[in-house]
Amino acid sequence: MLNQVQHDEHYMKMNFRTNIQLKKEENQIDYTSKLLLIGSCFSENISKKLAYFKFDVVSNPFGILFNPKAIETLIENSLNKKIYSEKDIFLLNERWHCFDAHSDLSAIDKNELLQNLNIAIKSTNKRINESTHIIITLGTAWIYRFIETNVIVGNCHKAPQKEFTKELLSVDEITASLENICLKISEVNPKATVIFTVSPVRHIKDGFIENSLSKAHLITAIHETIEVIPPSEVRGHYFPSFETMMDDLRDYRFYNSDMIHPNEVAVDYIWEHFIHVWINEKTTSIMKKIETIQRGLAHKPFNSDSVQYQQFLTDLQQRILTIENRFGVKF
Image (cartoon, rainbow, N blue to C red; front, side, top):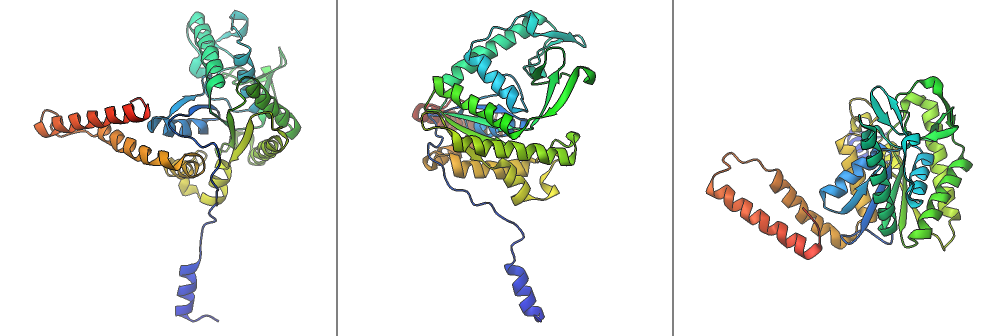
């Protein structure tokens, strides 16, 4: 039996966390990198971080896409330079929508929607061709198939449920989709680095067991894809966003009030892991300077007309120009 002193010392040595140890990857990101992020809403969290630190980043040109088949469709359509027409859109609840895109692109005027879609296709094509890093976040293996056309949709846009069948993609189906994504990217940009990750956001509406099954299919398929990609194609990597949330943080205090989405603390923690693995060490010093500038830009003075504040703005502008000229970033 331990006495009280021994018990207290033993308690103090205990670790109540299972920290994930991650190693740095090659082909890291710096301020010459061109980034494309596609996928689940968690990719939006990471893209906001990248944008805050003034990296050259494009995020979800077709809006948030949750399943791998929708992402595959976007990449194929972009590289094939698909031209969207009236047959690809529909009117519902006084707005025009497209099953390939998120409702962020929807519009009251159909011509506006078509313009949004075709501009997004062109910009995605350009970005895939020039990207150094393409980060793909998978949210769910559950898909909805539009019965009338037998096509898997990216978003149902709240159309009647009876118009769709709900299916769980098998590991083989997801693997085939991811392999095709890598192949298509390789054909136009073989030097690109593809980073796969699985969103830690739980799709509880599918059911607890169903969500776990979905995430398991995604994780297994990603690792199978990475293992079979030949050297002639883009190299695939896995970043453990899901595992960091589920196995390292592993506490409801790291969730928003909905108990589904990671809160700001959790996102910051995963972002720090991403920096460690994927951001070049020399780049982090630049990031610190940019963060100081960002805080200065967000500062709200008591007296905006004071001499002191005007001098502060002059100094801040000079620091911005120095950063822009030395590292090519844009504020």
